[in-house]
Length: 445
Ligand code: ASP
Ligand code: MG
Image (cartoon, rainbow, N blue to C red; front, top):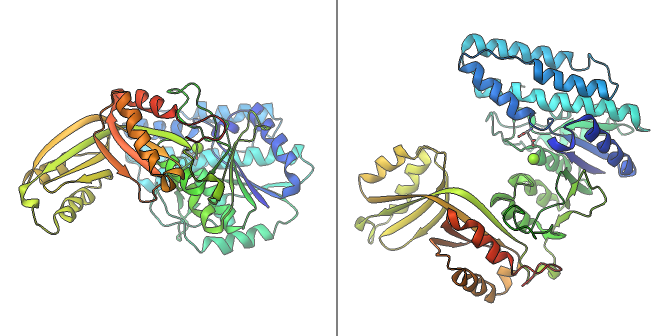
């Protein structure tokens, strides 16, 4: 069997859902399990409505419900299909409006509306047009269990056997399920973090020992760089699990960073495909192959980074100094990206948007601080870095030739990722300069 996951843009309208039905039809012989996200924009819309409600503003769910009803009408499905979900979400909004607050637990229940609605609509439509009877079964009813960390729940291992069991009960049916949502052990709805439907698909795939996990999206796979910065960036035909994980983390927004983990554990290839161009081969991600060595696959980037420089002569010959610093960041839940140290100073990067003030005021007590906003991380990713020491030298030469000063450097522990921090205003220049070395056919130097 295979898992086919369709993202928000692939299911955002009646015409997209029609495309999905044709794609699924083409794969019926491979016994797919279909996983869907909420319609594009619906999760954001729900979050916005939650925010407004807790700020005592009057909101209306009419637009949200109407959008789904329009799709039902266009697909000639019963108008009442989402009555249960619509009533539930209305009641939840009434609750948070009375309380003027929304707990993370309630927020997850509200967000689940998007995935549940999409799952029911897609399943009903497939049931009418495909020659196989189709069922909507929410992921938690299939057995996906998580911790109770609402908003960022972690999957529990015991899910696997429950999922296997539930799917085996419906062998002759096509199942459409929800991405993103699950339940904790007490039966509360949880979510896996934004963009988590890819992760759900891969968890399902691993639980069911799928032959392949397909992520259907609106681009032709993972690109060699952000095409907005590098117009001649192209999609990458094949890459290793490690490369794809690094790229997902360092800025390529095509897949959720955790997606590869379950796939790696069962060695299941992940294919990234385009719903709007289904015959395009896309990107296939699988276990590292000999032939991939010596290549650089992509240049990723992420901006909005702040550098915190911490200098203290007390660091000289001290043990436990770094531990002390990290403890402060951890206690204030500020996550750290890159670290570089010398004998008396430490530079740390953090993603903007986190509350740094309490961290800084504690660090100030025993060190001198400087904070530099407006930086970006640029990463060169490829198995080639592990094998060929001349690649790093070439990378630095290119940056020097482009007159781009480097503020910090890190060679990832996996050795397939060389990252540097540059001034954010030079991100585009840096990505473009480095991209020039990815050759179009084989993505190699
Ligand atoms: N609908 C969820 C989100 O927008 C999950 C997903 O699309 O992957 O984050
Ligand atoms: Mg996504």
